[in-house]
Image (cartoon, rainbow over all chains, first blue to last red; front, side, top):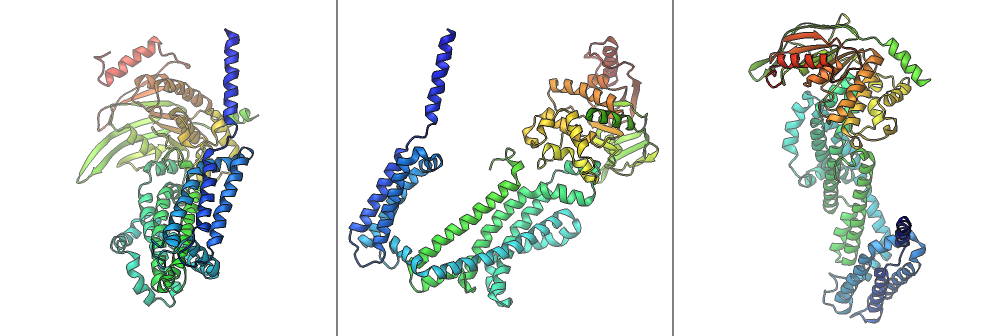
Length: 335
Length: 264
């Protein structure tokens, strides 16, 4: 009886161990096949007209297929890579399918008319030939966004803190916030461009303003919502006003401040791109508007793709910072 | 060695005397005033453990807020060792019904609140660890409050109070929200801490048995506006036993004072 139990245990342990051995994910093999097929379609199906870099795209797709095949074969040796490939397997199948649909609809059949819908190699062409301008645009956008966000977030945090902390400040700021707040910053672009000495300073001001409002409102509501019992506790322990403000009010309202920062980042990006399209003669918004003007749609999509990558990276970065600073919230609220 | 240091500190700390002199208090509710305390006179000797009993909402907790200095009384004076109470002071620490730990601070940093607020964080680092050890939570020093059970959280709140070596510990139903087993354990711990440290304790509770088990003296309040209805010593040695005939007798008398004699 006893013996039997032990062998049973051993069997289950062995089973568990073999389950933990990394296995090959069949989906990765399918993904390799899909990329190879996409490459074959791109290279062997003739274009309806001459399009540069078609072979490059096809060979590139094939190379991805080879890499995936290697990943599939060597997967059990590379634990991390294997897990990553297994998790993203379905995407690695979907991507070449979508690329091929796009390739066929645009370059191979002309079902999607050409100047408006260039094939993938059209985007590649834009990156290869125009990367200095694109990099310049990314830099210009990032400088405006960075400076504007820094000023706007700092000012918003301080305004919100002061508004929530003292009556004397909220007497003046709260009607102002109610009145100015609902006006979209984009509506102020023409006025600001006209009032400011340079489009650079105007851009920074617009981004800062767009950030300032949500950060102010959320910081204010965070400060107003601090549990009064925290103040009682701190006061009986000998805290002065400074301690209450810096060690109770600020940390207690930080979760709200971060919500404000997320909203502020969204508003800031929107107003930045519109401002670049209207009057600031630099940045990704300007690049896209310029590409449209020249009917260079490959460049337009290339710019949009860079925008998507850049702004999602910024949002992710803010999430990471929040997760670090608000680690104590984990388990208190569901993210 | 460490234990010895705590022992020394305990001998230095003496309980404070508390004098409540004809204190009345009323709340302002739009246009009307609601009287909560009516001419309360109470003198607490150093080192006494006084339990305040009274019907729910009679103003016991309000009296504690006045003693803590969180609010000034409408009329009358409160004195700690003869000096009038004008505001909060680390010599009078409150343990509230909710532990009200700061969720963004670890357990240790919560206990360190008092020393930090008083600008003595550096010199009192050792005392903070002692206080944690005193309530048996050394292993949880780096945990965050949301990871603690109700009893553990209330122990942290107790450590946060004791690290300041209060001469008057104000307990506002500190065990009220705990489950009954944790509660019984912590009642024993409270007595032990009080005997060891020698502070004066002022406890508000709605639990008659708890009052009699812990306190050297029980004060019974009337309905709002509260007046002192009865004030009697609990002349029993520690450790006490809940089945002690004298304790049972005192409980019946206390319940009678609270108007609950019929059911017992």
